[in-house]
Image 1 (cartoon, one colour):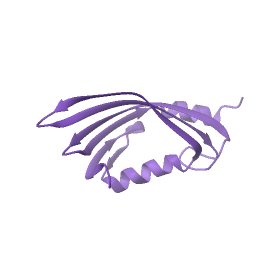
Image 2 (cartoon, rainbow, N blue to C red):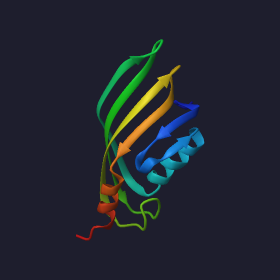
Image 3 (spheres, one colour):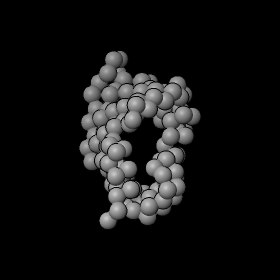
Length: 116
């Protein structure tokens, strides 16, 4: 069972605008397929009512993983990555209808390409 509405909208880093669960799934898989040993922590979560029993939810999260596969962030670097992000969901009829996710992709690329 999915938590996203079939026609969900996604607004993401670098001006990404995705429509529908299939486009969103493809994007998430592109990111996750470049990493192993992924750990995600929810650092803070808050919700407020939105029209007729629906909800707006804000989540601050941290993702760590080893960049050990070629993909969305280029050639594998074998570096541990740290991604700090925020996601806002608009839940309508208990499904995520719209999502805004922000994290600094430039910081991710810097972690991948900086020689130490």
